[in-house]
Image 1 (cartoon, one colour):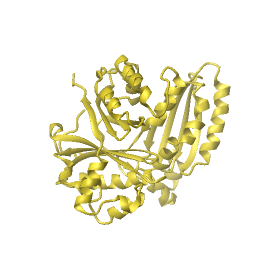
Image 2: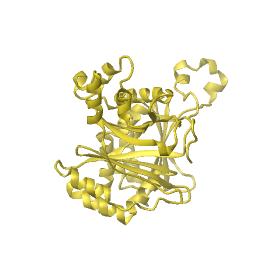
Image 3: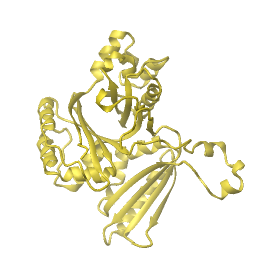
Length: 377
């Protein structure tokens, strides 16, 4: 599905609404005791995480091997900070030997019913009601995700050539899922692979991983990675791609322009330690304003964030250096100061003059290695 012109698309982890996380699990036969022991440890760990409200462990009444873990969070940011942390990677490790398959789903809470609300809705606190998602968001049927990793300094050109010279896998995954677009960028020795999927993201990622042309590329870049991995070992591969995951925290599209009139760019931001989420939130607010600005060159923005790495993927009409301050995210009162508090390097890293802004944009823009759209067939 392609958005029609003037159709505003939006998704965000920053709307302040409560978050419901659903984790579906299929256990190996005989693994229930080990799974329950691992879950108890996980539950105790999660209960101490700021922003966590509650969780439930459920077992299917039809198939005892199928389990469900649901958790509720005050909002998406604390959950994302936890699930993308090294602490989480280590905590869930014991579950991997118990679980045959998993699927994670995340939802903002839009409506709520229950005795407390039905019998005395006026007694419900303003805080509780205010944490509900304000209104439904309009989507375009596309799931956006990214992976990032670093290569050994000095091998960037070799890796870029390997990543550019591969044969695209089949776009069609199944009747409901297809690969829509894959873009590869580099900034120094950091690689970012942004993908767009119609349908089931997990099914698409598994489909891509099984393709021989993709496996050949992954094996070819193995010697150049800073983080060692063994793709023949399921635990090694899982740990690598878990750490490489770069989730989408915000996407907005004004839908004012045709696809053929738009160019794709990516900007790299290094946040101060512990400031990645705040930086992503600041840029998201800026891009919401840009989406409502009819003269903005930015037609859409997707922000990916993990730890202190923030990637801002822009779809723009014409060159982004035509409006460099807007492209960087500092056009507006106080934005230079706020950005300076969050960027690694502080205020001195943030440009103030037009010449400095243009230089900052040049230094931040990632090099496009390849950008491939799937055919409509």
